[in-house]
Image 1 (cartoon, helix red, strand yellow):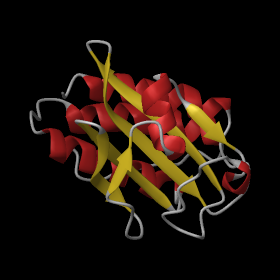
Image 2: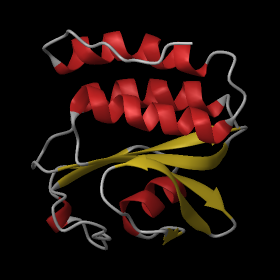
Image 3: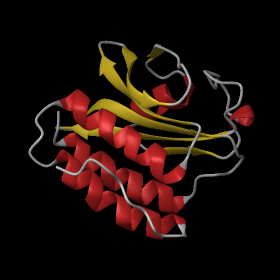
Image 4: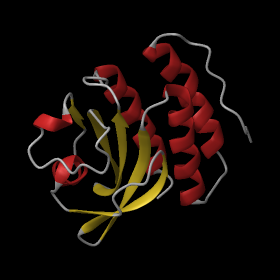
Length: 159
């Protein structure tokens, strides 16, 4: 098992290309969901330095805070509410260039400026979402979407 993440790439895409196989190695052979989510959040946070990286787990009609890296976060998010709840409801990734212009945005941190939320599906049901917040406007793009969806697919096998 790897206990460190090494990233030498300088572009966003090259960082993902190095990071995804390393996260796959962390997940390999580890059956514990929380351990896998925690290491995945940490690896993303270390590689990119985003403000907040974490998971919310779908439980009944709420998303409940799971493993994360960053400041204290909202504990529960209702189905369809905020960016996370909307991604859960729509079963699709949502990129938000400016959270201040997203109707119904839940401000867990006043410092967050942009966000991406990727649903994790197991057997066609959203079981969790990967939520990433940045201190910068328009910090996420189709490259993030592509690789975070790849990560979500890998993590779906942990559920």
